Image (cartoon, rainbow, N blue to C red; front, side, top):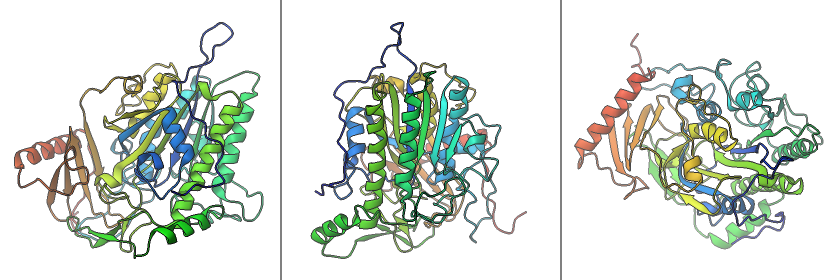
Length: 483
């Protein structure tokens, strides 16, 4: 296995973190650091099974906290999941169901119009924490609307690099064209700069005479296209790929159910992508070391998450593989919606792996409870607190998980929806008028369609999906030519 020489010292914790006492002996309000990675697949980390990518700092965070093996994004593309995370509300409820501005392509159905921004009337986690006396900081990818709907319009005091774009304006290397981040010098790598800015905010916050807690969100542009090698590490991954692989990258045919002809990458072997993962990990290490050096780590809730599955499926295959999960970004198979999720901090058990399914909307109420703040169910209407799982409970109340993605996507996906109930999952493909059924406990790779064997179960799940769509007033695709 590759061992990268640039890695910062790893900070392993062997006991649950506890908040340091205030002067009166009571714990202080914990800080919150949220790492959100763009397009990172569920198995793109060492701690989730990758043997080619190197993520020592994220792996250390997993060892220090609780990792969720079945964490889901609310959508297989970025903007809806980001909206769901920040609001605790399903993408259908906030009317952001596609990446902004979305894909316009011809097919059986007309384009389903949704919002091109997160409405200012929506109350974000940042706004609630700010009301509770937190300083709020945002760095990186926003992608939730044009100017007037940027982070500083949604509860963040500081915005470094966030704007309307989904990929880095002008690329990853300076001189870039980001309207909210000026480069310091040509050749500067965006990921390192965002880490520097976040670390500087943490240092300044630790020296704040008022001692107010903070919420810092580092929202990476990595590992979104354009795939751009990190010059610090790519040569090592190129040598490793040459040593390991002597055959062409294998592929898997995909898309028949959706009426598409695409392929998925079937091996993690692209050095440039591996270097982008490594750069993300290096940035996490820089922020975590800053927390440690400033004496803040024991009183900081740290969350690590991704906004959708890794990009593996397209006409020419994507840059990563999500195997053994099926397909990737843009698709409602597990590879498109299952994410790495790690939570560490005060009150969180270390070294635990939770198999209970959870979803991006859950992070809002979880943060509130970990920070000792009251629940706001009128806001985070579609999320539940994960604190019982983080504290040692085995399960939450049973609930359905629903994905509504009535759009076309460049990965080959065509309009559809899916619902998970227990270990059963149904996927509807509107383009072909077909549906599939999987038992995720026995078949997490979704290789055996049980629709013909269990029509009763498929009918149950499809009825539940229809009822949910009706109750939520979900926008359904309309046939082309129909008014």
